Image (tube, rainbow, N blue to C red; front, side, top):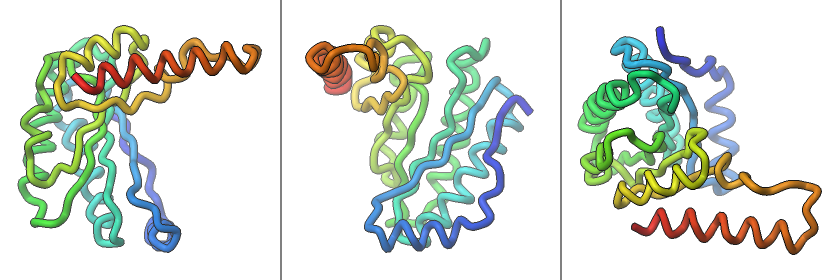
Length: 184
């Protein structure tokens, strides 16, 4: 398989019960798709939704995160397979069983727009997937409605060695640029 599924989570139900008790909104699980391999993509999405159903049953909102590797040679093709697999699972969810999707910024602009409009989707957020911040922002801005959830890109340009002022200024400009890209 050209995909990495998640390891089994034997104590998931106990963890979910603790999360609900702690007032947590949702939980995410991350898998990585490395190539446009229909079986690999299906394995990832099937597993994500299997766990998502348990998260929903516990009263939480699952964050489904099937990351497509930005270095995959056939990334656009892998993303087409992913959209099809996600749509199939979303269509099968009963009303009131909603999920959040967290995806790599697509190669083809607007690819995830139909999923954003799906009644079972609360929101579609983008992970930067390792694109440099500037490129991530440019790509994001070309995908209206896609919201940034960048951790690696957010940390770019920040260092322990910076004094507070430099660090704060760098972080503020990063947040500003990501926000601007998210609101287009």
